Length: 174
Image (tube, rainbow, N blue to C red; front, side, top):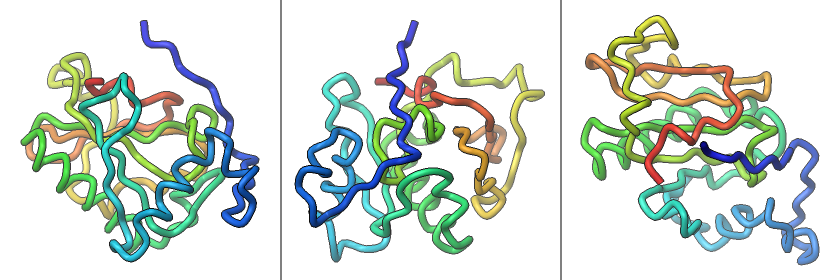
């Protein structure tokens, strides 16, 4: 059983000028992204959580903190974000990858990010094509605006997308 850490970040007010606000655990990715300024619009870092040594994190350089961050990005920004994540996933895990973004209520960090990792066997749903939707391009990924999470992975040469979940990263190897 995977236990979910609940950290509703919808009201987070990180302030890079206020060290007290940045001391909160929910703001640590806001601090991390400042270390990568000038690296480009999308940043990839290894997950520093010692229980997730196989994972990567993808983050936009731009701050889309708080609730419904995907809905506040332009289509081009979302495409760049997801394409960067997929390229890293394929580089590390071939076609056995998954990308997951937890819901607003289940995210423990306010800075927009997604988890990149190896898809667990229970996430491979070749026999369950009824759940989720199939898409052909990242431009078809939904810009979630209701606070729920999403996860997706390659299947049959397409992307198989699952939406509506809360804690979605459990489908990835730790």
